[in-house]
Image (cartoon, rainbow, N blue to C red; front, top):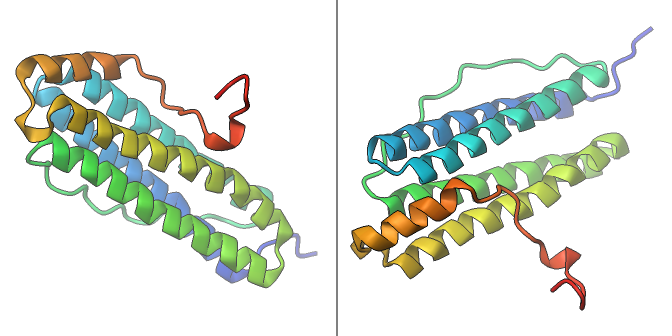
Length: 183
């Protein structure tokens, strides 16, 4: 009896997304190493944690495909981009990558909707919500750097930013969760 509960198209798309998440992990690891080498240990720690989170996302995709009777395929992971030339380029790269990832997530959601694969559609809703958080987080990094002075920031303001990011949690409050008592 065939126990596979995924179409070939969805199985391939989910495997591709698993690999995309691993690639994201490598990108953020690479950016973290760059920041660490520049003396930004707080920013590096933030990026290392984000790298691990992306790896965890890849495992979620792997487990889902396996649980639905499929077999995810691990592909070669492209090398991360070259080191950024500034913190602005680093944070812009993080944001761009998250937007690209959101687009890929939405494509899988659309595919699941078209195929009426409600289990996959439901599974993907966690990632839709996660990408709202990821884009908000990446955007807030850009905003924080702008407030610090961008690429013309003083050493003191960059030190403060770096220190703040050392212990900043990876999650962000979402507008959907706001109430009058908890804005």
